[in-house]
Length: 578
Image 1 (cartoon, one colour):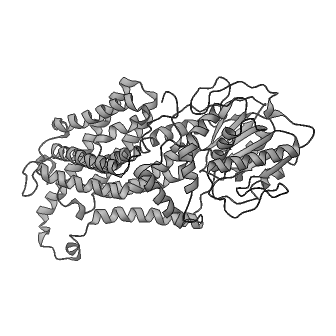
Image 2 (cartoon, helix red, strand yellow):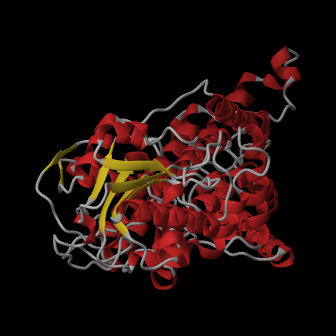
Image 3 (tube, helix red, strand yellow):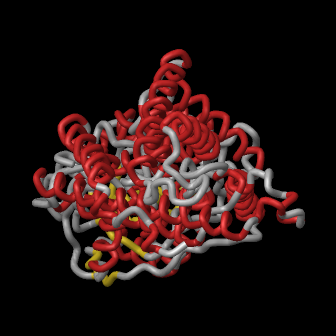
C-alpha cells in the first residue's frame, strides 16, 4: 500500500497533537507545583502505551496504600489509561476505510484492547516498579541497571500494543519498535534538560515532548495500518504453513516474558560469578591538605543533599596525630562482604596506622573482629551500635581519633553510628559508593509487600539466603532518612566521597561539592581498585584530593537527570530547590 493512500500527514492530525501536548503540559504543570522532583514524569502521560503504562504503575507504587485503596486506585487508573490510549489510537489512525478491515476501530474495541495491554504491561513490569521502589528506599545502581533492560525489552516487544486488531499475535515491526525506542530517548533527554530550565521553559519542553509523543503515536499507527494492508494484499488468510498454525500464539507477550527470563538468568550468573563486573580506575592527583565540612561539603559549597557546610581549621580533629599511639582506621565493607581481609591492602600501604576491618558479627574478648564468610543482614541501628563499639575500642587502644572508611551498606551504618552516638572520637571519614538519600519512600502497603517478595526471590538466587536484605530494608525504611538528615547537618568533620559513575542513575539532582570525586566504576569494591586505594591513602595522610574528573562529574549529573525519568516519582526531594 503506497504512502499516498494514507488519509493525510501527521500535522493534519490536529486532534492527536492537541491531546498529546495538552496531557503532557497539564501533568508537568501540576508536578511543578505539587512535586517538583517528579516533574520528569509529566511528558510520559501521553507516551506510547508501554511507557505510559509504566508511568502509571510508578504512581501506583508512589504511595503506600493498603490493598483496598490500592485496588481502587488501580481500577481508576486502568479505566483512565485505557480511555486515553483508545482516544489516541483513534486520533492517530492514518487511514479511513481504505481496504476491507483497515478502517478506524471503534472506541469500545480500542478501549478493551488498550485495557488488556495496560494490565499486561503492569504484570510484566511490576518487578521493574518494585526494583525502582527499592532504589528509592536504598539508592544504589545495581537494581536500577537490572530493571532498565527489563523495561526496554518488554516495552519494545509490546510497542505496537493496543493499536490494530490482534496485536498480541505478532511481534512489532522494526519501525514500530524504532518509534518506541525514540520515545524512550526523547523522554530521557527531556528529563536531562529540566534541571537547567525555568518554569516557562519546562512547560515549553513538555509541549515539545507532547508533539514528539504524538508523532510516535502516528508512526506506530501508520506502521500497524501498513502491515494490515500488506497482509490483505498477500491473502494470508488461507495460509496452512507452520507460520499459519502459530497464528493464535500470543507472540508479543511471550517475547516480553522471555526478556524477563533472560535478565533473571543473567542475574543468577552474576551471583555465581560467571559474569563479573569490576570497578574501573579513578582519576585524581594529590595536593595540599584542605579543610572540609559536613558530608563531603567544603566551606562555601552549595547547600543541598550533601550537607549544610561549615568551616574547619586545619588543626581540627581530622588531622590529629596523637603521639601516644598509632592513628586508627576502621574499614567498613558493604553487604555480602567477607571478613577480615578487606583491610589488608590499606594496612600494607599504611604501616604507621592501625588498620582494622569492621566485623558485622562483632569483636572477640580481645577486641579483634570476628571472621565470617558473608556479612550478616542487620538493621542499621544494630550496625551503627556495633560500629560505635569498635570505634571506641580502637580509640582506647590508640588514644587518637579513629578514621573511618565505609563502603556501600557501610555508609548506612556510619549514618546510624553518628546519629545514635554523637561525640564519638571520629577523625576523617571516607565514603566509597555511598548510599545518598536513603529512605525516600515508606515501605508500607502493597509496594512494601512486593519489595519483600522480590527480595525473597532474589535472595533465593543469591548466596545470601531467602531472607536477602530484609532486616536492612526494614530498618532503612524506618530510620534511614532521619539518620542521613542528622549526619548531613553535622559540622567539623573531614570528608571524602568517592562515587562510581554507575551510581549516577540513583543520585538526587543536586550540585556536587568539591570533595566528591567521581570515578569510572560500578557500585562496590572501590577499595580493591589501586587508584582509589591511593586516593584514600593520600586523604588519610592529610592531603587534599585535587580532582581532574570534571568530565565525569558533568556526565554523572547528566546521567542522574536523565535516569530520573524512569525512577520512582520524587515526592519529597532530598535536594533543596529541586
